Figure 1 (cartoon, rainbow, N blue to C red):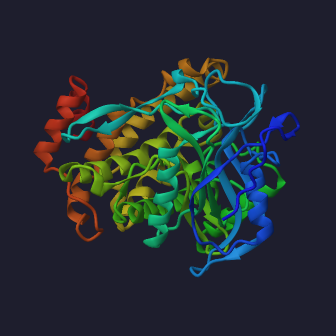
Figure 2 (spheres, one colour):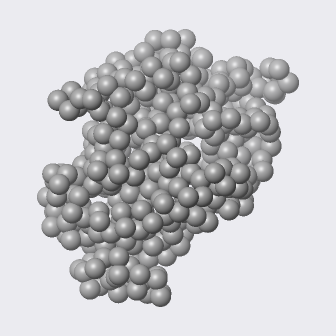
Length: 441
């Protein structure tokens, strides 16, 4: 594979052209002009195009590729090629904190350290813990994380789990290192020509352009049940939630864990009428962790899918636009569980009462405070959200019995028995464990 590296003195609109070294390339039947265009973007012979602020650029293929599996690949997702951080941001954004402004080449400047988030995790000894995201370079990706994205996509495609298709991974040898790691970029091909993600069906879609709205309408039509017309947003959301649960089970059964289940990490394949996974740079293999923690990590992922949904649903602008009664009736938490465990939704609904009791209390506080919250700083608004660790524990408790019953048939790893699991949660939650037991009674 040839690269389009140029001498350092050449510039495009004040941006120097960058040298790249190809580390990995996947055999994909891509046209010569699309190959050249992608490498022109990687090297900044051509400026990358970003649909929204962040570090992921997009390129629409001039010659779509029909794969042996029936996917029509229509675009390239290019992560780590640089960043877009407009001074004034409207709509969706992948940028948080104080960072350089404008269209930027990859750099070894740290992405605002203050926004690194605490996560609910599982330690190597099987105890629950608080884990923190790794530092990351702004507008760039380290070789290790680029390798994750590339190799994880290869693995999922090999196991017929719908996901982005890896194309290539390159290093930027002249840009220095970030905490001892080379800066890289990773290119994946997708059957979605634009990053129209499922988050629209939870959040506000007013920032979408005409092409994205057309894509969203295709998703809506597919996930609308003709036998149950008319259907509103809540009903469509339930059908998408079910598909997300089923896809996450396939992901887990393929021996993977740690996927960020925000709905913007699921995209729609319009040809095959199905969701597929994207953003795999934090995903890992179960075989690489202690045996006794594997089932807990899979349970943590499923709890994460429930938490990410809750995290979107009780934002003030969502609460103002939604009916709690309709949301409760068309239970998206139960839909995720039904898709994951392959059970009827009425059976899954029996497991979500505790989640609704906890979530509902926060919902109505936010409903009361919605007007004031709109003017609050981000950190203050977060103080009204559910307790992350508590919600994860509550979610795992809610589905743990069904998990134990179904894990072998679904190709999942076992989790501890009820008394053992409860003791681990008590050690982790401390006094809040009393509230957990109250919610579960």
